Amino acid sequence: MTAKQRLIEEIEKASDSLVEEVLNYLLNIKEKNNLHSTKKNDSQSIEEQLQMMANDPQIQTEIALINEEFKVTEMDGLS
Image (cartoon, rainbow, N blue to C red; front, side, top):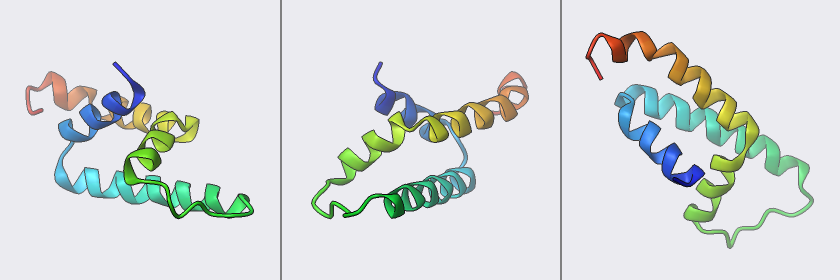
């Protein structure tokens, strides 16, 4: 399973409000990372941007933390 597929799978498992919060957080990280580059590549497709996000260590760390927070919910059978 690719990193992109894992990211999509985790997003699909989460609640809508959590998904929105996480996506906003991830987009914020992406914007900060783009500020460090000298030229933003506007021609990148959304798929390429998602792939970059899925491979970003900061984003992977955040997803792992979210997964840890929801372990109890998953054990309760609410997921």
